[in-house]
Image (tube, rainbow, N blue to C red; front, top):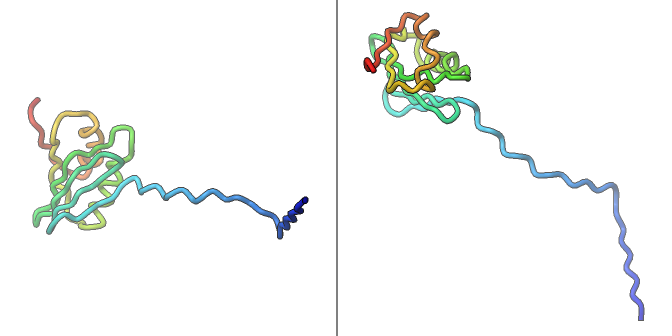
Amino acid sequence: MSVAVAVTVAGPVSAQAPAAPAAPPPFATTKITDNVYIFRYGGHQSMFIVTPEGVIATDPISLKRPAAAAYIAEIRKITQAPIKYVIYSHHHYDHIAGGKPFKDQGAVFIAHER
């Protein structure tokens, strides 16, 4: 006994791969508490505090990436107060690179002598 199987295809068939998840933006700012914010760029992060006298920022984190410009732009979304200080948390080049845009805005830098 033989069995015949008929297959009918209606229209063209195309296999689509599922869409890849969207990559997270390269930077983001998160409010931690009143006037305290975390700025993340890639896998690095800094923080800034908005005070009545101006902004205190840490670590420009701009080695081989335009993080300083994005960091300042994120601060400006929150306040137009002057950036008064940049505090280096430690000496690693990936944290201290990119200070010039802050200096150009008049920031004073604070770092350990070593």
